[in-house]
Length: 277
Length: 190
Image 1 (cartoon, rainbow over the protein chains, first blue to last red):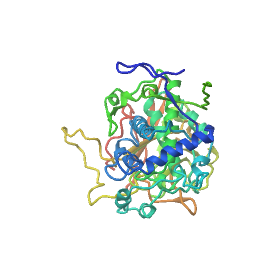
Image 2: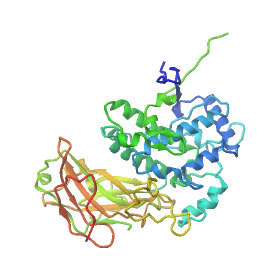
Image 3: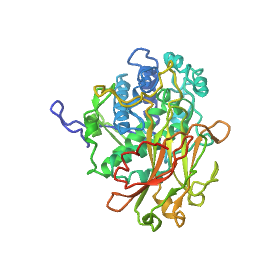
């Protein structure tokens, strides 16, 4: 059993696993939807809008330090950790899933379904956008962004002409880089390509994190980084970045390099049985 | 711009013409990311390459970079103006969110297969914006310079060259000794 690395404050404990969305059982998907539904219905600072708004609008756009820069990977790792902790605060024993867009070049079914089995809206399909974000976005100099602000809930336009998803071959080549900064930059580009392919709110930095698929996409990006770390254990992380705080998550870049110290790892599938009483 | 075709070709040093390189990169400087999200498709020796060209050697496709755009400015006047350098030495705030980016495209395979016999290379960059109706080129591409850097097996630059700047006034191409190739180009003077 994998355990998190012990620290002075914490003994080694079993880590939790982020699942492949395509391998989740219907029950696991429903649990995830329940947790997300609670977050989306919470309007205070524990809620979905507050966390989604960190990435872009409403201002300040905290991700300003995180795109096209070496802190792209650690900033988003810290973001996922904080979001996942808030998701678990809802009382549901869930972890964020990852969407492998090289193997599933389509919106995963769990995210594409408009409604749940009981007819309620599927919180993985769409989420409300904070009115303050929409109000600010309506001032954009770009017409396509202003049009988006007329949508109170997130929308997608997957696979539009001119967009594409990264291929397994491209990601395999990215994994061959031995230098962190080259790897980070290359993966940052492919990550942007997925945002563009999903389209709608995901296609623009100010609104991207409001779309629930943002989290599954970024878990995949984080997983690729995790795989790269395992593949190149000798690769060094830039010293100048280690002490940088990933605002507003109160985590330094050097503190997020090892996922198990943050309490998670990635799994292909998760099955669980409990011994009978 | 909605398309960049190098007015002045990149000159290739003898070592590159002879294929004496193990890796090659195009480095784009000061790339704007304030507007739409787009993929910039890079072609070698294919000045007429356009949307729909196959993304393989047959069309001279060399690689791409992607801009995840900020979607325009939502602030008041001056909000999205990147401050001019130099920065106050006591100001340790992060750089402005719209500080232009540097993008690197690995063109090793494409350069190995490209016709280098003429000692020069033509570069075409097509920005592609996903559209509801059809593939679109859009006026979203802006960068200050692009440099070709090749590397030997030891990992150090084997040569570099800078092509025309990408805005209005083309520059003369030149070669330098490339020690600072990863650090960025000298200020463009035209």
